[in-house]
Each structure stands twice: as C-alpha cells, then as structure tokens.
Image (cartoon, rainbow, N blue to C red):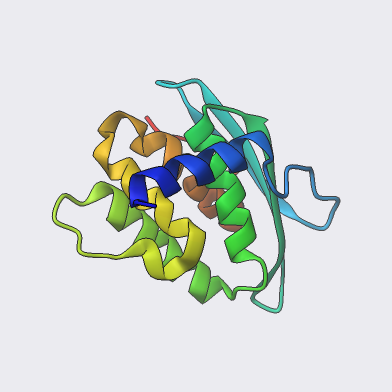
Length: 147
C-alpha cells in the first residue's frame, strides 16, 4: 500500500468515525475555529492538569480533511505535555506550510498521513484549523479564523 492509499483510508475512516467527537464538561478550555474559505467550523475542548493534556475533544462541521485532522489530533495529544503539544503543533504546521520543509510526520504514526495534504494547497487550512483552534483554547482565546 502506498502513502496515497493509506492517506485516503485514514482520512475516510476518521471522517466517517471521528474519535473524541464530543463536548467536554468543565473544567476545560475551549475555542471555536472557522475556515471561511471551506466553511469548516470546529470547537476544540481541552482539559489540562499539571501541564499534561488529560483530555482533548472536538465538535463541528467540516470537510473530510478538517474532521479527520481534528480526530487524529485528539487521539495523538491525550497524555502529552504542553511542551510536547507545542513541538507537535510546530512540526505539523511546518510540514504542511513550509515549501522546503524536511519534517517527516511519519514518525508520528497515523498523524503522518496529514503530510500528503501539502500536495493540495487549498486544503492546508482545512487540516490546520483544529491545531490553531487548540492553540487558541490553550491561550484562553475564544475564537480563531484561518483568514
């Protein structure tokens, strides 16, 4: 199976059966994200205790890439420290947005399929929306937009 096939399978699976698709009860931080170009809307909820992400979930409507990215993000970040989250955010963002980035997302497991989004520039904002929304939630901002 090549990367393109794996990319399609993982994106379809996480879009049809998103993981952690629910609201978190207090105490948690949350933020709303919006991608006006595609119409994606997401709310990310995060519960942090002692600098560790205890739980992270999301709700919203969006394209398959947006939903799958949020699902993959929430699966990957539970139990990570805030420092690990920041490093991962920067790795994902750079891998998707920097033209000559040599960051290999494949060592992040299934999250690596997001690297293929770089081949579809109009979809990069779809894949990064949830990540920017999580950053906003962690900074106690209420909303963020890709524009």
